[in-house]
Picture 1: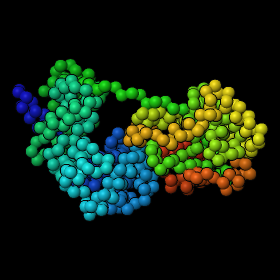
Picture 2: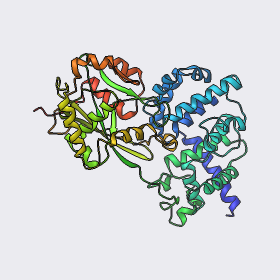
Picture 3: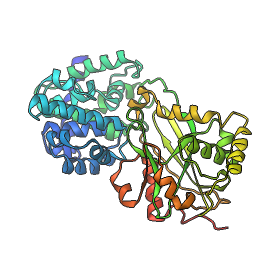
Picture 4: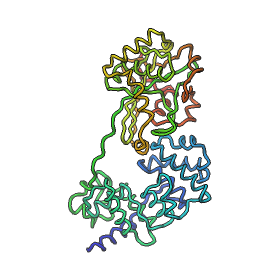
Length: 446
């Protein structure tokens, strides 16, 4: 077969397979451009099975572009909670407001408008235009590049922009007339179900007969992709601080940057792993950090290990250690404060002097990290240390003085407040376990 015949075979067989085997997904039951747009944004860096319940809830809460545009941002972020990459939700709402203002609340069949929406790149633009409007536009993502690399035995590095551009041109040539919607979805489906990254199911593939990569014995070698840098590890110490009424002290993140305006437990970056591992040095660093933010009264020596958790971003890996203390052990004295400062200084890396730098670092994450957001593999392991007591910290005077003088951005929350506010996954899991009473279930007693 010549090249034209190989391409024709690919397109025809792939379409036949898709129309016979395609999954019943909620966004495929409608050609509503809004439904398709939201689903494509949700599916970025996220598995289909994870997205389905979020899509249903999101559409119930924000059934139209106008409803999304007019909703409070905190409601949108709360509905997105758990999907990660929160800049996607903010960009989605910003684009919805633009459509409401300039296009009457309806996503138009206009390539320039769609491609210009905030958060919409070449792939998402192509997916919306082809699936919703039948436009013969390519929609090339990682799945599609893998399929094309193998079928046509393409050696170019798919991490390079020039390779993506070439793949888009090839994909455009393959779209059968009048079949853009089904064909682009078929390409995605083949990559998701059959032509998978590892151990592709070649014997089930509808285009196996003329797959050049398979004939060359390179189906597991392709595509070629340069490795990305692993996420940078960062060890953080957080405090679970509870008042006499059972409320927990939390704070809101800055207006911009990574996880903007979301809520979290107070925490600080440890300057080195040894400080994070040391109960006394870690407690001193955390107590000093809280004091520097206007939350005096936490006794460093009273802090005990409550739980560990991990949170993985594309370029950053948080190792989070949560500290608490025995009830009634939080009253501080001037001597305690001095002891905490001495202990922190003994870290050997200027732990106490690093508190301000660490806090500044936490609040000024780069725009690139904000865009990168979360990876899909978030692991929270609530495993208390076997020799520590699982308890919470009681502020001085049962929390009355502290509650009256909280710094800006801090507040006390109860279980109902927790359900209303938006949290990064790691803090959502920790606080959910805390308020449900399961965080300490497996903690050994002294």
